[in-house]
Image 1 (tube, helix red, strand yellow):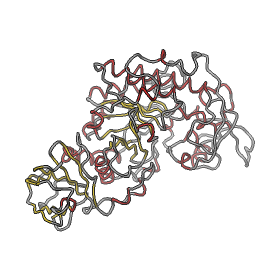
Image 2 (cartoon, helix red, strand yellow):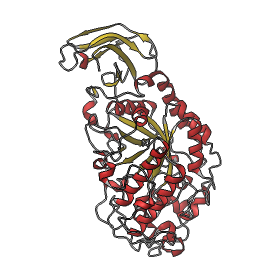
Image 3 (tube, helix red, strand yellow):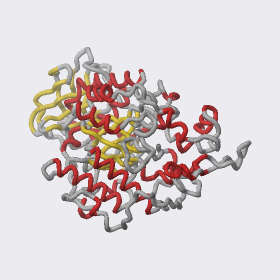
Image 4 (cartoon, one colour):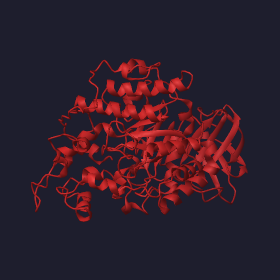
Length: 519
């Protein structure tokens, strides 16, 4: 999902002809295309957007990054990389399917059967694990819609599992009382899929074009005559025709499935087209909620979210401090798309808990992907990780849900390692230990998480020292969540808490502090 973005070095020029189903309209005329309401598709209008309280309170969501690329179970960006000679996934495709000049990605979609797909069961597990919202894939870069798309024949009702995946997930989310999200990765597809038009540079198939050059499949692979192995993550060269198609398909998705959250894998795309999608989403929500918008849109460009408009999303990373507005990290326990080779090498429950607490302390939410195999059922390792999260949240969720940042997000030796305000920094993070503390607050209550169990069965919270001029409140009572009241002392060194001999849980531990002027 991220490899080529970081190494992108050049702009892409591309032309995609308008499809017959597309209306003919020009920029400046999109307002009639969207639902009436308080917002118009302009940045000035969208400055008035306010992030709803449900999102600020939720803190934890789970994502099923699942689609036809999952059928192959060989990791991220398979549909693109299988057309790049010498890549791991190109070698995999040639070995298991044949050469892409003779057979292509289109021919693998039928292998996505989803024979064990049970959204009710999955969302029951996710709710038990503490998720307050759930997100399904809408369309990935492979240009395949996971809903009953009226504008695109390449969809999950016509092909693959022959199920409306988005609708089935939505109904399960509603049953379990979870907010419902959908992810959109579609806008970059014309560039992303241009590799399908290429050919091997050497070897027995040198010069033989891949199946993407067959114009019969232009509605899947696009109509680019150029091949770009480097992928600038921008709009340069994307045609107006594609922008119109994207607009109509995402509007169809929003109108029919009414998501509480719409995630964009990038910035708000295509200016007026994208801003009109936001206005349509927000107006639709306002119409259902007494004129007050309760929906969320995410963008990975910080500038989009600085004033109103939407929520800032950071892929596989953490912001450097307490962010002024609610934000979100999206990450995965392994690869984004299921990869048999990563089984046994997922993030541990400890790593997930570290990230969750750290992110919440900085005013953020964690959206965690559990990639589903082709069958649609989690593997045993994923179930084990989910169980670990479930057990931790059962003890500590009070210090997570509906909290707000404190005066500082935390303190400790690992704090400096996260001072990188960008995506893709999670691999630079140190594991948090008993010396690392993270804070959250709720009304008059302060929560201090110490991120490991100290050997001496006592923990020192240094920022709560009596001589710290920023922390002048009076601590009257300390509880250890999952245990009860504990003894403490407070002096110029900090707050020392004396812990029981038995841990109440694993991974990280929450102290609940009450008193006067603590928050």
